[in-house]
Length: 102
Image 1 (tube, rainbow, N blue to C red):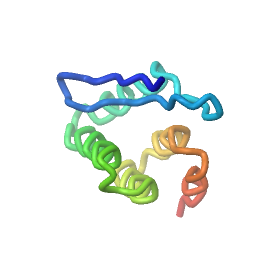
Image 2: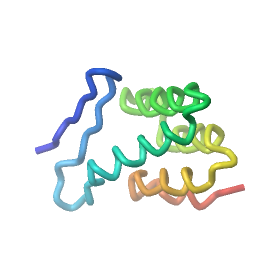
Image 3: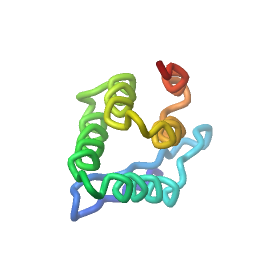
Image 4: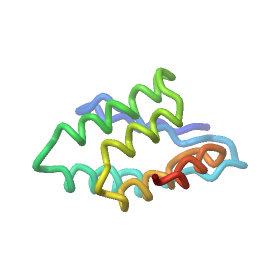
């Protein structure tokens, strides 16, 4: 059974996969990562909000995972550590996009 975690304050949800053959991303890791982004860009909240909006559009199937990665790469330019960590959360079949760091 998939577990949904919804932030009423932000209106975004994180859904962990239910299938046993998939490795679910630990909820705590995802929360830690999002908090890291929020802290890193505390002087420019627009970056944090844009990141959440990109994820929300993916959740609504309005963006592909490749589009998400490309947009996050632009958003996090100069912050390669955040981009590398973001690649960890990508579905396995698309994580190869993270290897293209031009």
